[in-house]
Length: 343
Image 1: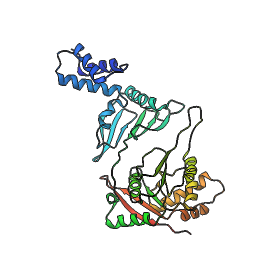
Image 2: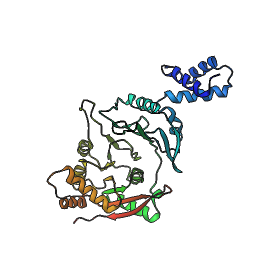
Image 3: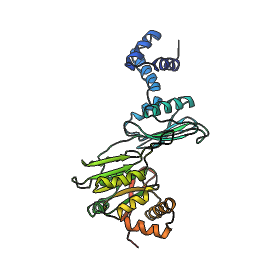
Image 4: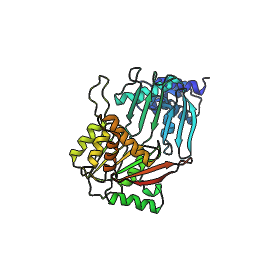
């Protein structure tokens, strides 16, 4: 008699070209090849086989868990998840299965990954973000990470005490241009979402992101998303293009998901020319480091600017930096609210 693993592989192979109800087809096939199994065993094997042919394959079990925030597959096939308890390994995948999952994820998105284009960042239908890296950029094998998009009715109270919340509300009410800084997974986007919920409902907002993540809760919102160029190198839309376009859409507030390139200059120009109350995020180790990083981006992407001139532009445009830190237990808190004054 075939083992459950062999039955699962055989059934998955049978289902790869199936276009009807996969669960029904799987059960019919199992009743034919394994008639002595119980109904609950048929159900379990059917669902395991379906997970191997659907989009995220064996990862679907963890992506279906609402407590899971991110699913990661390393080059050696080790699978890690991050949830409210932290990060831990939950299984192993054969390299070939990782490749199949990557192929199934990218195919409906019309995206391609290969040796000439070994890195792909994309957004799934549910808003989750996927990053895929294959050889030669990942020389030991393919790897991917899926960060689930979860919309919660977030509140600034999650990030600090009443004094902190009062300060955050004051920044919004006073239309201060705010940079939210922190390391990776510090909660920057979540805090921006929470602060956006403090904005009066009659205001118009335009958001600009590499991947749509912000869900501000406002009614009058235009959401813009950058697009990579095609494999032929045409058709791309950069954040810089979108920031410039956003200013023509009459925003009361401009929100740039994350600043890390040439768009920094256009965003700072907007902040200094009447678009008060704008928000953005920046990877940094402290509030002062965020100021330095923004100035360095100006110098890097706009030749002819000295670092002193760039710092002056930043201090003129940015009114405050809210710096987040994440504790070893996973708690995200406002560590510092640094007011910036023009020099």
